[in-house]
Length: 372
Image (cartoon, rainbow, N blue to C red; front, side, top):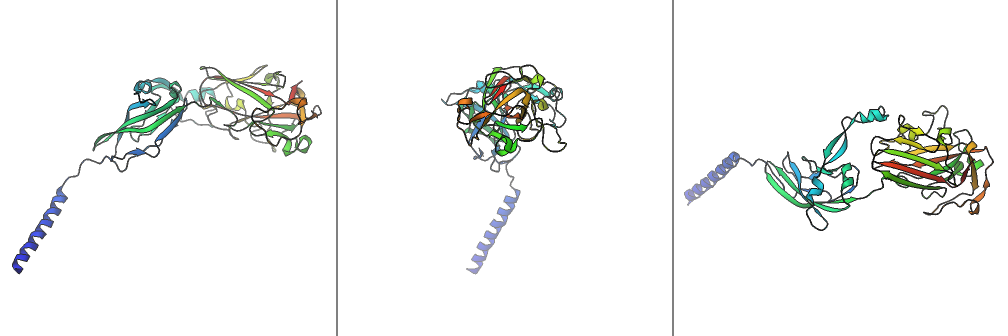
């Protein structure tokens, strides 16, 4: 009996040793492809005409390198719309890195720009990131779902309806509230100093925030090309101020020997294409978004109307305001009369950033002053 047990034990030991040897000699496959490859979120929103990038795929330990591509795209009705997304358009691209310090003119920026034929959205082959470019302006608004094919050395698999892409319209030229708020205030004539108690509370600020009661404005995108921005500023009666004569002027910066001497304005962002005429400011811009990067204080343009060219209403303070409620002049409950001539310059802050290429006209009417 004891001899039999020894034989059994030896056989088991031999089996274990053989298994270890067998395992140590077994070759694994060329890799692993997880069946649960996915995105962290399954919806990606694109604003037409703008650059956007989704999250990359979560590969769940799949072997690299991976190859990812989209196979089919469906609209909300479930129809395959591959032809919409496979059509190529001419898209502007960078050929060298943009430097906001040295690339300050139209020519230097355009020297780093070129064009390429691209589909409106692409899928990064290595990580599955969905990348949208300016050609999405040509896509219909709506929701779309996407099938992906993911492959590596271990094989290939289709990930059906893995991502929903939502394409919507955005605001082509963002102003208030997207990029800030219009601000209207008083400066001591000929200086950078706020009017302080002489012109009301809060450093002479008339209103700083959304729904500015003193500013009525409109933005018109009147052509797809070329890239031009035009600004016109008028008084309450629609009389245009003359930038060429200095009626719309730069606003001085505060402090002793300030650098820069003036707060940022459109001329700073387009020094070689900026033009001031009798009725308007205009400039040619190289690309969107424009401005590309802020020079400080967000994307606000600062101007003043010197006291020689305007009569300014004195008003009580507005603590808040509602959309569509504008200052009504002498019939308004805030009206207190007109400030003494020669006392104050009128200061105006204009928030703006262009997101879609094209030609734009921005017309501003200031409701609490009169051209003179």
